[in-house]
Image (cartoon, rainbow, N blue to C red; front, top):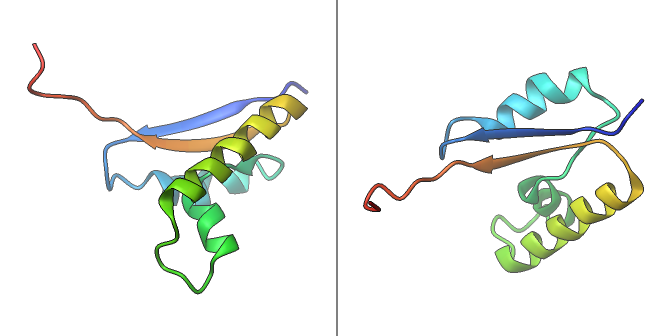
Length: 86
């Protein structure tokens, strides 16, 4: 079976993480959820807000390692637009 990337995109607060954790991940148990929030909760369970730069760096390294190793994974991101641009 080929590796795959499942990318969930939505606006802020749309429930991307909940969708993955409760619906997508159970259907794809071999896929890793390479999400900064999940990584932060696992590494710093007592700290509600760890250093976001450090978490982003770890998340990027995790996703790069998954790509390099050919493993399937899931990620989420927010879709943003600049309404003031022409």
